[in-house]
Amino acid sequence: MSTKGRINAQGRIVIPAAAREAAGLADGDEVLFEVMGKGELRLRSKGQAIARAQQIVGDAIAPHRNLADELIAERRRDAEKE
Image (cartoon, rainbow, N blue to C red):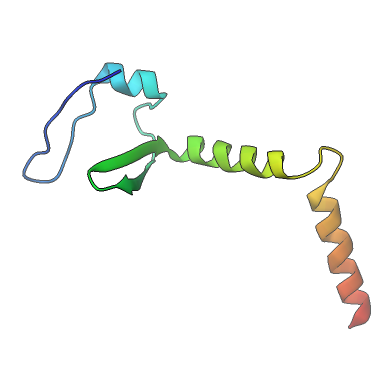
């Protein structure tokens, strides 16, 4: 999808409704801007960014691992040493 808009004097851009809907953005979403290069931005909701980070971590660890249990065990070992 391609559409256009304009930046006003206050630096605001109105994102057309069709573009917001296609991107999964809703009224009230907190959004993050990531500069991808000169003249290029990535815009996504905070929830979308968190979901992507969780996916990256999930893909990087074995399915049978439980990182929370591993962290608790590590902290208990450290506490025993003190």
